[in-house]
Image (cartoon, rainbow, N blue to C red; front, side):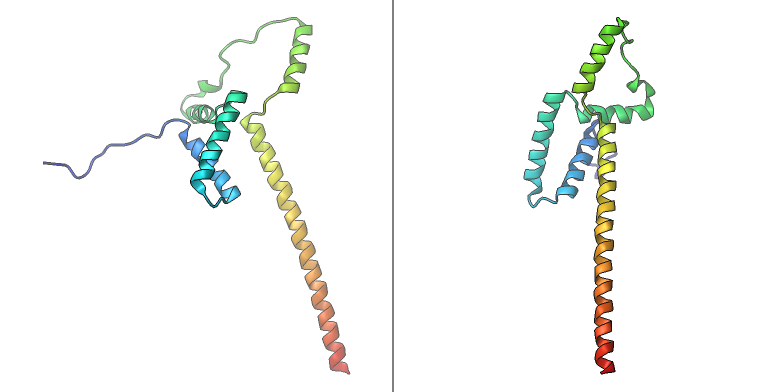
Length: 149
């Protein structure tokens, strides 16, 4: 006798949801005609970035998810080393030049860009409305002048 229903629950691997969210965000932003080809190119680009920067969004996403359940995921693994002040300055200079952006920094930049774009689009829309209003006023004046004649 077979059982038509099962209570098997599939679990999404940690970090996979974040990868899909990133893909979805880019698809909505770009509006590609061929979504599977776009997804393939997106993941290839993501792999190249991961190899260059050693930043894995899936791993980072799993840490973010894990932080909800276990706050130890973001604590430092190794205590900071004590070094001479000269070495600290040179290390700080090197890291400031070659510092990689964290996801939080990227999100802040993205939000700032969105805010700037929205303000500019609002400016353009207000300017267009002002032009339309002035044209309508001119048309009304012309109609009034014709009616007066």
